[in-house]
Image 1 (cartoon, rainbow, N blue to C red):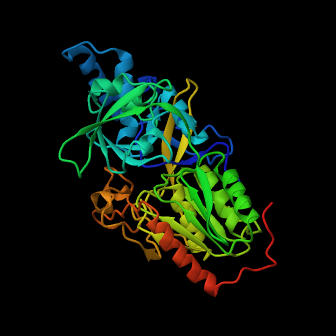
Image 2 (cartoon, one colour; image 1 turned 60 degrees about the horizontal axis):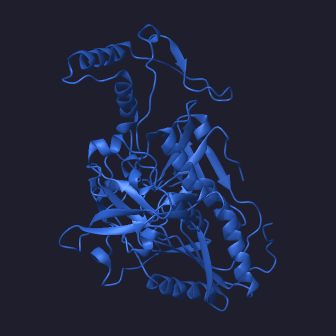
Length: 456
């Protein structure tokens, strides 16, 4: 299995936007005609580009006009911050400039520990916040926050207020205008929620706490049938997954496994690759393709299947995104698992985190990823082998109402379906029961190979 390049930390995060606020230094106009290298990596393919002098002149003209004629004085730093944000703003929903505080919060998320209320969010064009999903066993989940809820105010202040966005600090999911979600453990925060099933907005009071996200949970469904829930992909997720298998196998040989990726927004690509490797004896897991050589990578399984070929069913829904889709696609394309549930989110792009010397970072979309069969699921998602429907009393009928294809400025997909192709949110235990039924069908026609070696 090819190891990820140190120069490119491949991150497949959820469809959440991030704050775009940081200082930068303008390139001097006299240097505009110099050729500059697109990479400082000596091993990267040489490529040069000429800075467009006419566009630099246009920028300088607008900059001077604002400085001299805007109704209120504007300092240089604010103007340059706006210029830097603008460089990334219209690229795609997942590219962003992360100030030092947001880069730190982003790193905390991948490590699985931070102080907040425990909710994955997406910033909408009007800067209100749509809940992608509450994180299991956190204040948000315990208070009944639901997928598709819209947060319009935090502690009485509108989240769409530009001042709130500019003055923000660390937040619950590294998005600048949600900064008030962060705070000392034990303190309270009031969220004003709009929910489709409610006639008017309502308030929910949450108590902040240290969020230690348990990314992997497991239990026996029946003798011989295991269940593992992966809530997000963090640095330790693959190791936790392996330990969960050990625990399940301690109770007897597994005849089959339900792998639950519902409402898993993604995370570290390497964690998803490692879990796929645990369950595959051979075959390609995922490949990435971009414009520069460092963005191209291919990950393949190493010999040994932890379950010795015992059947696997992967449970997904509309909130399963990014690294979740990598894992589901890898297992299905290698005929290792059947996918059960609803169409997934459809985030098929790779983000590279590029740290800067001042502590800020750029999160830049640098590649698309492809399943082992060579297909991109960008703005399409993964259509399950067996489709499940939400319960009749599900909130909003279970309809997610959003997907990668509905995000403004999203990358076009190779097989994108026009309009909304959003799947459905599948809550509760009923989908697990349905997945177990499907798993038993596979067990009836599949016998695990006794000779297959196990991973170390």
